Image 1 (tube, one colour):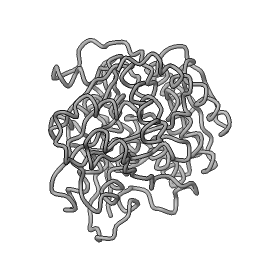
Image 2: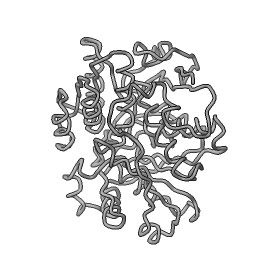
Image 3: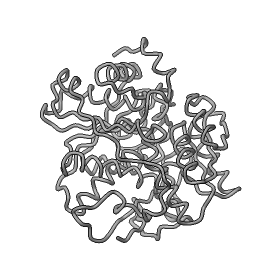
Length: 383
């Protein structure tokens, strides 16, 4: 198989290397306080057998991946939820059981392999918590040195994970957006590979693996709907990339309807989708910290994908998210962190517009043990 980068804006192509993160030409148009310009996607060319596996779609050879079991997460068939809601084909893709208990391991796994292939030892990442703890854990298995920039208000459990895994933690006064900029300044001064979401194209590429797995788990077919907790828009873009690859190689002939779910207290991508472009930002202050961003770094690319492939957006209150978290736990037995429970809250908000026999997949992107303080606020849920 052959792989190369292609700019999602101008279409220029580049060799995959540690020296390039964004399209050099389109990045010149970057404006302060706006989503990233010149995001790159990975293009795969060649022939695939019917018995392909996920590694066949990735731009790093299997031998470079660290010895830690990322991916292959279960697709639940929650019978009590199905009966309660009247959706017999509702599924939960459970990435809370990844090695560091979050979906972010899919991206960190590929980043670690890429670093090994290019003899890179230092990786730097900005995060609200999950990407940091993920890169720290995967980095520990790979023998890498990890530096994480996280807001001081990040959930304690995620910071404890980073510490246990041996990462260097740099607390930041301010939001994720501030941590993002400081981490880039750090790599410019001290070197190292940035794992920042959207900025590093492989963060999108690693996350596409969930779409490939869902296809296999459903008996080599596409779901009708996929609900994706959305902050930066990178998981959303990754899900699209996976299904687009499957369509390109003839394994599916239609794209699922992908639904971006955001909190009304961190709504900037969905607001832009409704308006057609980004305007003034709403400051993010949501209980769902993993999807709390002011400026969605992958915003332009996410809007492009949603528009081109008839995607949808759903905005739900923090109260609805906490109520969904409780219902997932008490009815399905799956304790999800608030950002992950947002997928279920989003589904509940628009389920009356979905055919009852549709095959629906909710991405459960992190464990509730990541943030037990949020779960203790369930009494604040307003439905």
